[in-house]
Image 1 (cartoon, helix red, strand yellow):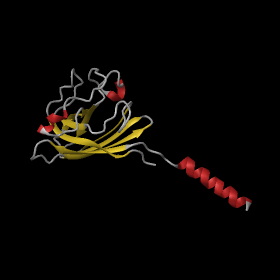
Image 2 (tube, one colour):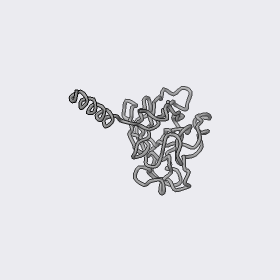
Image 3 (cartoon, one colour):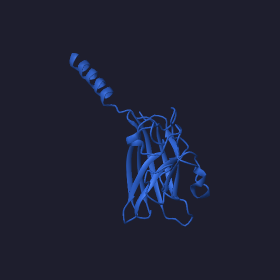
Image 4 (cartoon, one colour):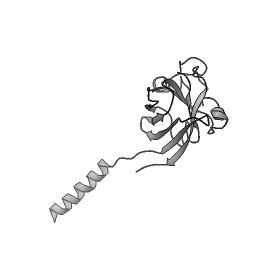
Length: 177
């Protein structure tokens, strides 16, 4: 009986320790802003202790380096222009959020994604200070925009040119336990 109780306690403690708890999750389905575009992709977003984890895949894009950002509004109308400007709740200069933080970069500053000759690219970032939903700097309902050119980190918005793809960030779950 003592061994059974010890085994049950050990199993209970192991299940508590090994249980992984994730924060809120969201997804954006990314599509070309031109009706004839074959450009598609997706972004998975998840709250973590380090910040907002963003994992993105793009297919059918022109090869090269392209700026990618979260924009203020959750609309892809008007070829992505309805998404407004970069998400910038702190009113700071343009930069690279991962290295410069919210005090020195727009909250939506992802930097660039490299697209290979087959038109494919992927990006994995952790963005400090952002959350999926709730919190001071959440991205729920905002748009992810893929730009036609490289973000050169110039002011005020990085000189990345037109908007070639857009996806609206939609919350999937508040927590995933």
